[in-house]
Amino acid sequence: MPEGVFFDADACVQEQLTRPDIVGKISASLGTDLQAADGSLDRNRTSALVFQDAGKRRLLEEILHPLVRQACTAAQQGAQATARFFVADIPLFYETGFPFAADHQIVIACDPRTQRERLLARSPNHAPHQIDSRLAAQIPILEKANRATVVLWNGGTPQALAQQTHIFIKWLLLTNSPPRSQKHP
Image 1 (cartoon, one colour):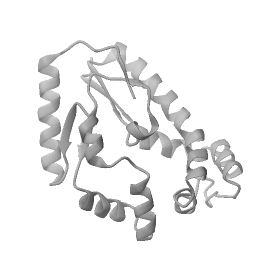
Image 2: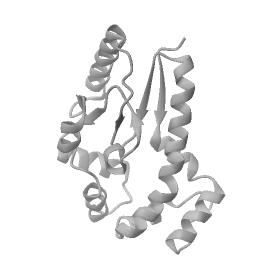
Image 3: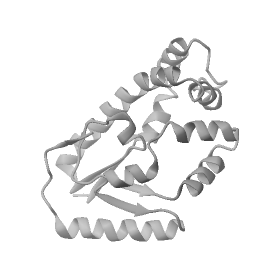
Image 4: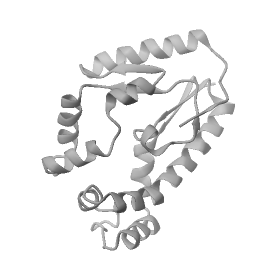
């Protein structure tokens, strides 16, 4: 039996954005053709559009978030029979009110300056105002940390985060606490 199963919401979104039916639905909902040459969604154009207009961002979320929730639920149900624990990486967990029963809510946090720098590095085609719009659409990281049951600090090196994660997983396996059956917003 594997110790854990991991679900990545961002990877699920990326997969959805390659589906022609989803790209068509998004383009139709947002009122403009946002298709890239390869048939996937043009992420830069879409980001520029939805982070300028909260209404369009909500329309996009109404299409993608139910698909992510469905895939996450299916992965969690599959993991129940095959793994000791299930981890779901859901960046907008608190913002979307993701209905997910969890023993622990883990927030990986860093200071706002580091968060902004990393987002700029990951999205070099975005103008600074687009980065600011993305961050403004999120709950501040310190508020997320206050809501979490576990906070891992990611202000240092990837190795430091890996070490914290390893220690947490070791603790999790040692405590082997039974799952709580409650939903968290």
